[in-house]
Image (cartoon, rainbow, N blue to C red):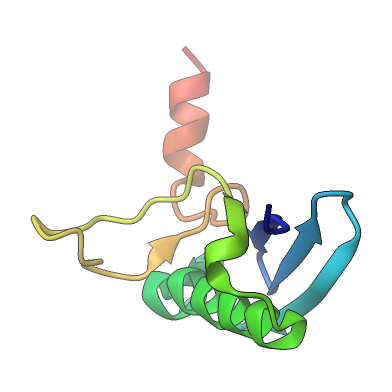
Length: 119
């Protein structure tokens, strides 16, 4: 039986990291890529979802496969984590309509949140 691998990728606020483990949880490859965060005005924090979220996922997947030299068919499982409950409006084809608003650090609706929690 061919050896199997597990691929994990985490998309973070300022960088993304990926790891490829074998069945005994030994690291076959480990990589990270930095990315920016847009701050178009005070209190506003955003990511370009296609460039950062999907782009980093693809870049890291390719890099891990290249570094490890394994056949992609040997990957038994892929796990991904991201920033959480961000706001990313999409069209009927799931294409982003604007940059993603980053939950937890974006403060553009602070007054509205205070009003909602006051009652």
